Length: 113
Length: 113
Image (cartoon, rainbow over all chains, first blue to last red; front, side):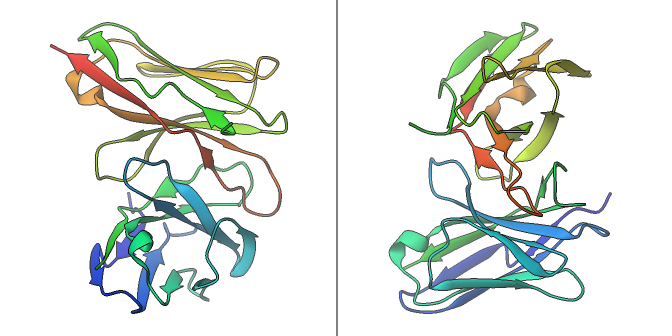
């Protein structure tokens, strides 16, 4: 079965640079979620989109923005990167938005030097 | 106090035994409950989800929910070394069109030979 696709899988950036992470949800899934997981921590919710509209916002810095496109893929844009942004970034998708189980992509490991 | 609490472990069980993982949550409005398995450096993998009080079985896994006690558990029967991983409990509270997951810090399970 098709899974969530994320690219790139690994990304190394310098401080103050920008990064763009991409997520392609499971076919027919209409909801995308972004999570950040620091070393030894649990995943923290950043932002979600349902039918291309922002649905919920968590602990996402103002330096980050995201959107969902007409083909349902999503991009997380991160600017003015800081050392503390180094983490695993997961995208998850679900069908229907409410109650439905979320399936996670393999993640993008971002390292900020 | 975290919204979702788990014993960090490690929980060590011998191969073939039953592993019992527990989770408590603070928000009485929580509606859906999920168990994810996460291997080191990998993405969370959905194992079970439960919405109603009682037990739900799927193969070697049984999820138990007691909303009155705000308690969720996961039983793994016939534990195998490949079950060694961190198990994340997650809950959702419908606040919009997409229900974010709030995770516990996870319980590390070690299945010994």
